[in-house]
Image (cartoon, rainbow, N blue to C red; front, side, top):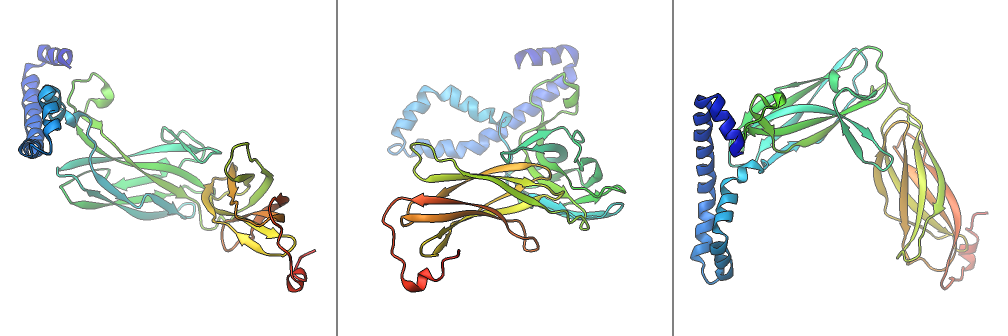
Length: 336
């Protein structure tokens, strides 16, 4: 930083003194925000005796950290919702809104930006530059405003307008980022930061677009098997779930154990996740240890919407332990 200041001084003395003045004001404001905390610590001698000793030994570093903490602090703000699902038809537009609220004690400037992402088989999203993937919709979106300022406690509604090109009947997606900005506190020759703004944190909003007329939902379940390893506290089972359609499938997956002797069934808590078109997910489920001993038909069931049939797969397992006796009424209910 001293080298950058010297470089600025040699090239532009006027901006150098202006920069130093603004930096001094910023440091002073941060110091005043923290002086009450320091006063409280020093006044409560008995409670903070050890802390006070530490403060005396490291006062220079602590005050320095307080003074220059603005270099790394992110702003406290809220964005809602964090998911936008558009269903506009080709050659039409649709608008939704998101709300941004400033929870910090300062007036903050914000910008809106876009990015693409590639979903993975593990459910993660790899962030990429905008308009760099086949299924991007980043260049179909217009936001208003794209740059704004909020006072402490103030909020604003951002209009997000989706304009779908003609003949685009498939599903597309992207990320919309809301990010606070601040003035640069170090001199940079980077042309991308020439405006004197750096990003200090961001919140992402998932954006999906798929025409309402696109009803191409299709899920397939395969490779249902036990994957328990030595030392696992519970038995584990996995299955491969494949999205054969062209819609983002919001799936609820659960295990169903049916005792083949008593016909007693037990359903276990589900897992929720989504699968993007033409991708697969490997899901693992755990079987609790409280089932009575016996032979069971174990099924994995995938529910991806009330309008579509359940998908699943089944295998037969043995559970060690005491096998319950089936009475006559129960034995007549056993499915062949």
